[in-house]
Length: 142
Image: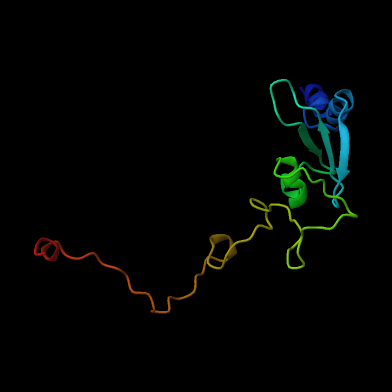
């Protein structure tokens, strides 16, 4: 069973060998590389489809949240503009760089009062007034 797992790891759908083989054999054209080292490819549309096929080969782990917003727009046909390092960027100075999605990991964000961050919530300040529905007698008297 370990041999089968090893072969699947080497030749599986997300293995570097499989991705390299599909990319080379399909005649894909390398479009560019982003600042994180991910490489983007494109090939003509399949029969019956309008858009060319586009995909990304991740530098390290296949983590979709590591695709910068500029390239995400290109991958999903929101723009045909290919982001390059020498072209002016649409990014603003106040925008933060892309971060991996940490949900489900030990470094995920937990707000104050969350069970995994101590579980002690702040005391209520008393400025909240709960709504109570009107009594049925006041509704029928209208």
